[in-house]
Image (cartoon, rainbow, N blue to C red):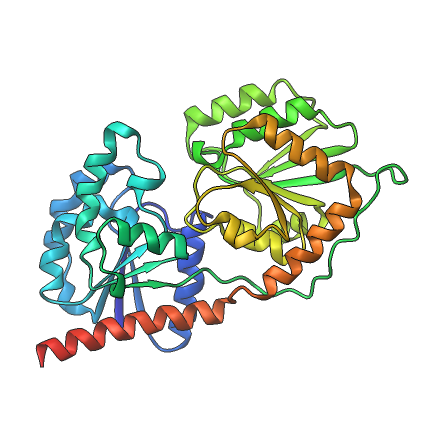
Length: 357
């Protein structure tokens, strides 16, 4: 089977969606599938719209058995999807709908119009039950929407032995892994940390700092009010360095306003970390109360209170750490994710073949 996967932007960026694609496509190629990854344009919507006519005219759907479209590519691919469907089955890969995740109110109608052809795809892939419910509510037929959640690397991790700062000199380490974009809630996190200013803990920030320069300036302005030893900004790190950061952390925090799934939460669970997150979307179901504390989005005071609870209560950290290990054991690994993804592609190709027979 030969598959075209159409996305936008730089697929080498270390975001959850691009990492998901890389792991799944590696697994599919190991099974003998041919995957052509095609970046149709730059990621901004206006760049997509400008590139759409030329891309659609040049793309040859008949070369493939299945066409998979990243929902982020709604602008460049949307005008062509109905035509492509007459030639080959189309699968929409939806980590999140931009109209739900990031669009400002003035842009929602425009985004919904661009996303509408994706909702009519032969098959749609959501990454959570919450995501599936959104697609159905937006008009996708329920029988066409499959859930293929991200996997993670199973690790021989034991629950964290919660350290008591009263008897040890090393500060507690609070880890956050996220791009510096508004929906990740970094400004809320730093405002909460300013309220706490714990003398016995350090906040470590890992992730792209330049994805949204304007928002990055807001983050840096808040960081200027904190001492260098209170917050460590590490930016993008290697895979090994990231695993080491998870390993030395005492707890994980990410106050996202919205997540399609939240792969970093699954990674934190796999490392036995207690988690503080927002009570939004699929996040509570992924983490569960056995492994984390939940706060409203954009509420720095509530976030500070939950962080303070964990920082000052070693027994609670140990309890949630054990819950994290238990929760991680129930999540799919990458082999299972790849198998489910392959099933969707096979079903789409088989149904198309039966229609043309």
